[in-house]
Amino acid sequence: MKRMWRVVVLAVLAAGCGYALAGKTNNLPAHIKRIGVPTFQNLTPYPDVDRLFTEAVRLELSSRRKYAVVPDANGADAVLTISIQSLTGVPTAFTSDTKLASRYLTTVILSGEFKDVANGTVLWNRPSLRLAEDYDAPDGVAGSDLASLFAQQPNALERIAKKFAQSLVPTILSSW
Image 1 (cartoon, rainbow, N blue to C red):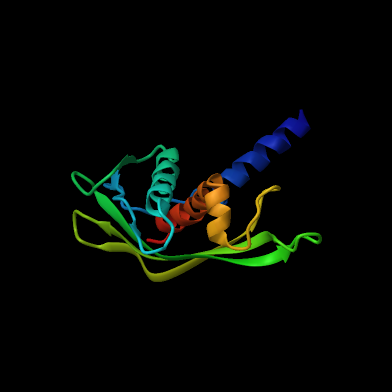
Image 2: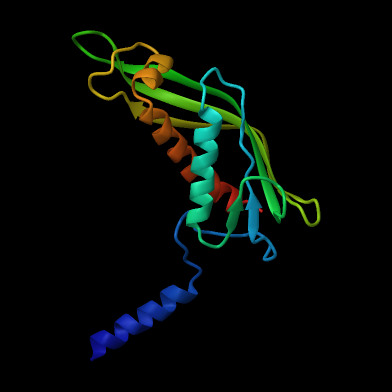
């Protein structure tokens, strides 16, 4: 019985200490219920980057279940606009036998703004944001650059977009 009380006391203390799961913080104004996420501007040489990254961010925002995510600014309480400035990959490891890239450091540079439509307040603004991720090239993919990887393994770009969204969305939601 004493053990049960200790557990209850610890649970109450933990609930009141301000602890929150990382990445789940939400500091947006309460009136924001609909977030507009227009298709991102793609300034890279890679086709479909805008579509893949936009869809990944929309999905990540929707997973929060607190917001309705719409594809444009019409009727939105806040709007996220992003311009993907560059997407680069630098080989960081090579196969021992064929000397092809086996690992890349993939870097996305973007600029963006998240704006409260009702009062015109900019909630988040980054003229330049750099996100980097190590990425293993799948077995059997021949190529020495990122374009070859994306051409032969299209889901590689989808995985990069998903990681990008998982990094960007908590930043936007907690930065205000």
